[in-house]
Length: 253
Image 1 (tube, rainbow, N blue to C red):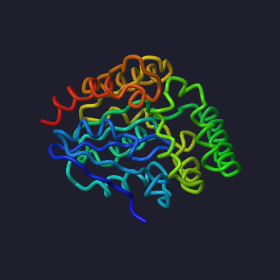
Image 2 (cartoon, helix red, strand yellow; image 1 turned 90 degrees about the vertical axis):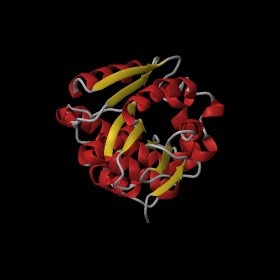
Image 3 (tube, rainbow, N blue to C red; image 1 turned 180 degrees about the horizontal axis):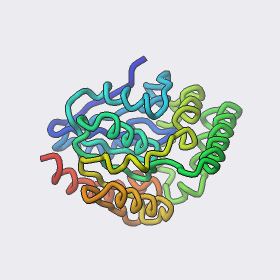
């Protein structure tokens, strides 16, 4: 089963990759804005939405996603899990990535013991998902402190419920943070413009964003989305667009 892709608008291409338990539709507000002068590509990531039967890890999945979008160079924008997918696409297929924007992402856990512990937690989360089902799992997922600033009316719960136990479980097991080989040492390979973002209230990922940008080099910049936590593009889509639009204009025209 192929990756599910939706396209809208005309102009320079921007690919949007969502976070865990979401689908491409989670970008609706931002996609509508960007589609006024961009060709926006919305992807359902492996294990999610219309791509629920696609079971791949990050390395193999990078090629799958790049093939789904096509050879035309584009700006790739990813959030959280989607940021990790987008990062791997940029490393595997740099000719297809004109610019790269990462919100709430990471280049992986370097310490082997810490990574193994996270792997154990990811597998336990997958088991919990299988035990309680998607509806209850989504409620528990959104109840985490990480999403404390996300209003219920912007969480797109109905869209998350389009996912399946099997799809989400495969994503946790194959592409969770615990399964991700760290790629910090490869970040200087990124020669395209890179924007690393985090929500103002997301202290952990603000620190990661600063480190990632410093490791990438002079072609990387950071941006903070005001009045937002980890899911900054959902909490404050207006502020997220304010941060991303000028960067896109500078690097896609």
